[in-house]
Image 1 (cartoon, rainbow, N blue to C red):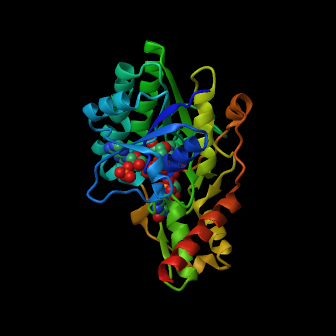
Image 2 (tube, rainbow, N blue to C red):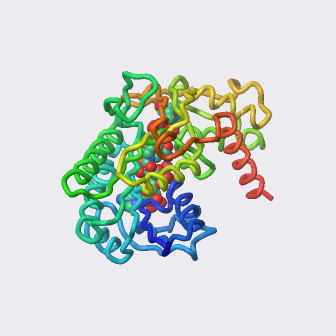
Amino acid sequence: MPSRTALITGVTGQDGSYLAELLLQKGYRVFGLVRRLSSPNVTHLANIRDQIEILDGDLMDQVSLNDAVRKSAPDEVYNLASQSFVGTSFVQPVLTGEVTGLGVLRLLEAVRSHAPQARVYQASSSEMIGHVNQEPQNELTPFHPRSPYGCAKVYAYWACVNYREAYSMFIANGILFNHESPRRGYEFVTRKISDAVARIALGKAKNVTLGNLDAKRDWGYAPEFVELMWRTLQHNTPDDFVGATGESHSVREFAEEAFRAAGIEDWSKHVITDPKFNRPAEVFNLRGDASKAARVLGWTPKTRFKELARIMVEADLKRLRAASA
Ligand code: NAP
Ligand code: G4F
């Protein structure tokens, strides 16, 4: 098969960088859309920077999206760019709506005009499900978003379904439950904990301050989720798939497991709570049912909860030790 071309938005992020690595291994020509920042944020691309082609662009800017799609002439487009932090979406709701919601429509328009045959993957979120009324949650669970981020993702999800139906484009949504890794941003709770645990274990910090310890999430391992994204676009018809592990654990349990991974048994001595980290509306409990992805795409996540906490803590210990060597 001749090599295929992919355009990844959000290539500098956690998922984008893992996906770029996966597609390069599969022989793809990979273009990455990168927005202009005063200091380039390419840490996660260090190992593959010379193998991918960077295009300047921003989900806020239609012209740059048109150009990026035209220049890359992609067979597959993976839209992983977004303002992805739920907490910030309460502080910057309009920006979140512009980027995470309307930005997707801009990209769809760019693809419709310049590469209508391209297959499109939209990284939708379990935050769309939000306030759950069903356990576990699958592709048919109704949406009840609880944040401006969740609302923006619902808009984007339906824009994708609409363009699929209206223009017969190949557009697929991944309804992705939380997935983490050593490349997770430091503001997300798992990485905040793994980084703090490593600092505490190395004597560089004493405590970590968190919000709601009772919130429960279905936490998977990001490199396995980008495999699901790829498989979704190889399927013969465009369809929407949940990505999840089927296991749900509280923030408290993650902290407990992370401290244990660093050899600290009494985790509660090091965890402080502060309501300033609580959200105006919380998603209390998520647990996904990814049986459709298993049945149709042959995708099943392997890394379980304890292993994930261990991977993240060990990576942060290694990073901090190297930094102080
Ligand atoms: P991430 O690490 O926060 O990466 C977000 C990416 O979006 C970064 O590359 C960022 O670029 C880029 N971006 C932000 N604003 C942009 C704009 N205006 N124009 C162009 N690019 C922009 O997120 P992630 O965890 O990899 O998640 C990937 C996607 O999956 C996101 O859409 C997220 O909402 C969705 N999702 C994630 C999860 C999860 O648990 N990780 C679950 C469900 C859905 P900079 O480097 O310049 O900031
Ligand atoms: O790690 P979080 O910030 O992730 P959240 O809100 O679940 O969103 C992530 O997963 C979504 C998929 O469901 C993605 F769409 C989204 O882009 C992002 O990747 O918070 C997880 C939970 C929340 O209930 C939060 O209230 O942890 C709770 N939490 C408790 N203390 C905290 C903290 N969250 C953060 N970030 N920081 C805390 O100190």
